[in-house]
Image (cartoon, rainbow, N blue to C red; front, side, top):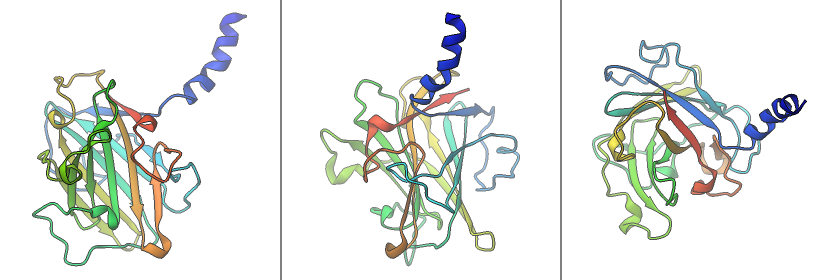
Amino acid sequence: MRILLLLSILPALLADGPGVIFSRRIQQDFALTADPHSGAWKGVPGIFAENGPKGEPVPGHRTEIRSRWSAKNLYVLFVCPYQQLYLKPDPSTTAETNRLWNWDVAEIFAGADFQNITRYREFQVSPQGEWVDLDIDRVTPQPEGGWRWNSGFEVKARIDSQEKIWYGEFRIPLASIDPRPPKPGNLLRINFYRIQGPPDAKRHIAWQPTGQNSYHVPEAFGRLRLE
């Protein structure tokens, strides 16, 4: 009877914990294509972000996120339905764009320190392939917000204007997030976000809602597990 009772309440207990995305291992690094149908992404299940920071539904913007990892890199692919694009004029893809979050972006917040959770890294890509990475310290902020830190990450973006979907792909050196050698079972603290649309119709989408208007709530981060 006790076992049956435990099994009956286990789903509810798990639902109260942080969300988990499983990152599948790949033996070789691969070229970024921002194509969910490419061989590297075929058959890789994702998770979905479809609510705002406070948990409110955001219709029409259900975002799929997939992940893989190699001996050196973490890969993340965003599939981003949209209603309106809000893009920076004169984009640059050869140098990072500070304050990229003023326009449409997909974002990753990730860290490996489970003791000092206010330390983590932020990575962004726009539909035009612009990018920025930041070293975040919520207790002792880095100079200029940490945007001059450089992880060496790479991005690829693609817009399908007919389907109204844009795709953003990241290749992030694992060493820029986690000092441990990568191996199956390693956990990262992580959350995924989007900012989408012009100022008068802006949408905010979060995988793990933060309960606040801000995305910078590390207590709300989910988990990424290397498989």
